[in-house]
Image (cartoon, rainbow, N blue to C red; front, side, top):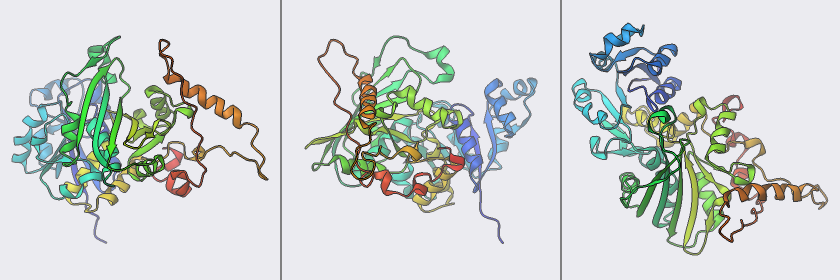
Length: 421
């Protein structure tokens, strides 16, 4: 039997994104991680040595320093490029664009991250939106974490023809956790003064006919981003329709304040408790009990884990550029299964609490459940100077109406080997 084709992959830049995509590539049965390149000699690249990844010096002057601290350097970046089909550039912003001539000279396909401009590759990529357009291309750019999230969520509505105009407010983390000692901010929020912020026009490089305006700012925390989206619709869209559309879109999962997931930190803690590598969340987490709709608009609140959300997109982009898989949905399913991406973080207890105990008898603990959910919902109402009370926690729909209930248990758990989400 002929050996199955495999893409030979290099990762240039073993930082926040690079280390994650290296691990993700290593998990794919149709890819081979040939090596990683960097210029540092501290603990970050030494982790790659512990993982058994071949190490290459991305700059000639970096090699003697790396070797001096015991890092086994297999060669230069050019040596690495000579062995691969595609290189994932995960270097700092603007450095990647400078590497473009080097990749072209080596004759390898190249994938950049969202810190670079659209023009570096001429094609901006989000797997579930425009996978087929990347087939066979020499290069592509996986858009930023925020643009990836906006594209996923708005595509869920856009593909139904519902989006007349979208507006979103993004509150970004102040810095990545690993460098909080260098770039943190304390006790303030910094608004971006440019409207639209760059994420809106960036999303239009993925969904060209999307009418969107974004505003952004940064806050004093490092546990991912939060988005608030207000979408004017072409017709009234019900809450049930909105839920179903989001459920049917890949890499979006619901969380609920009523379950105690009241803030960014509690969702991050859930990822840790589920045994996620580095506590990563590859999905967009949409607060189901914060969804709202009226005759003109729908309203959504969702969390974006900036360190990991683009990892599955990068893996899919490898398949598209190299032609390993021509169907986007097939690639997405394959990547999701390998990483453990899910539609329900807690599938065994996702169903609403039973309202009756047979023969129409009400469950005696229903009032206590409602009271506890209401207490969680109140967490978001901190303004003592405002005469505002939280709305009562919405009644969970019957199991037959809930999107997750209409899928089989196996469907809910797909891509969660060993019970891990």
